[in-house]
Image (tube, rainbow, N blue to C red; front, side, top):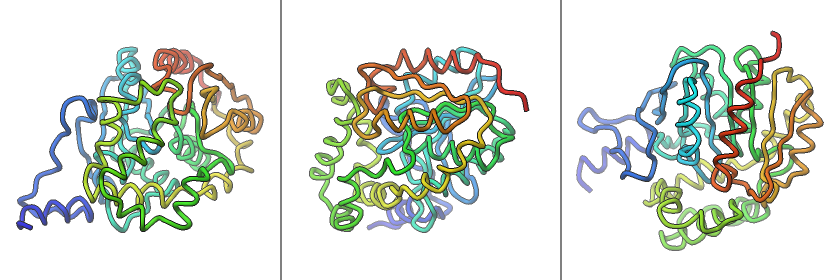
Length: 312
């Protein structure tokens, strides 16, 4: 391995680039098209997009995913006159994959606060999907004065995760799966991604390749299990379940009626536990609602952001 190659590997894993090592190259066109910048936050590098003006709205993605999932949504919200911030969670997508940093839901909640501080943003509206929903709920509970409105989509909650498949892998086969060759890993993740949509033709071709792209290397495959799967843990949602009644901000819960990973009854439970929360269930849509019904997602976000926020 050359010095330059070794340096790049050290940078990606530990976040301490030698002076002659540039940031990771931009992805090929069509993979992760709208993350335009990198920012060092609390000693680690995050890939992000900060564009538009007006009231800031932060988009939080889920797993197994990255900010690519918002590609058909974010530009519309920007065009409506909002400042939109989207970023890859630490250990995901184009963001750094540090070997010794906490990338759990709890760790990601702290990182969200550090990012907002670094960008000079005080209060935001949050739009969050899957584990991003748990991050958003935890952040709103910990920092109620910093969140204007909250929309969560097909979020993990209570004891809804991990799925039996991921639980078995975590308990019995994590190291084995982390060492899978590329073709076997791609087959595993492709099967999982196919379950996120009701129209499986949407999860093929360039779209599928974009979801697989962050893991197209040994480091990427290892990172997937170490930074994502290892932290699939319901304790992060169970420990806030009894505090959801403390939320006083406007909350809308958007859910795919055919979600195979997070059944609708969890959405109904969230609605009942969060004072004043609205629930909108989208027929014919699965867990990746923004893939099955991007126009409906844009409509719901626009409508929700137009609502007056609750009195402080």
